[in-house]
Length: 127
Image (cartoon, rainbow, N blue to C red; front, side, top):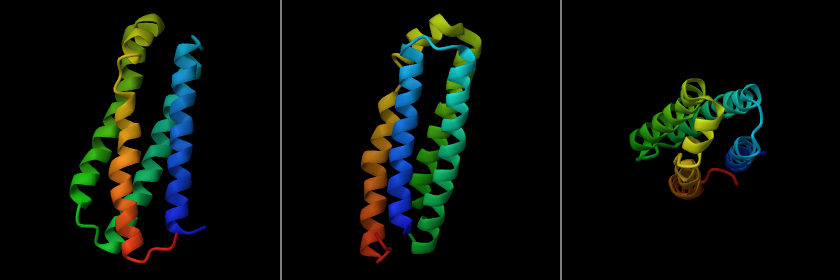
């Protein structure tokens, strides 16, 4: 698989994981199960961001610093999920989660990563 195909596959997996998390919260699954999904999201997201950032460095992506800063913020958001679940408990967490900027992660994949993908294609990175 090429670098771009890997990144696209990782994006799809992240969307699937976020959907699983959303479903787990809405279906009142146990705190332990929600923690497990959050940990999976964090681990996979860190791996994905490292892959993206490696490609940015290799290809001289001009927006690398801004993109990396967005990555840092998204990781902080994921860790906040764990903190909120711990401190609020399941019921209040569920209420808070319904207002969580879930779309921010999805928007990053759709827009910022699309810009990166377009740049990589222009640089001749294999699709």
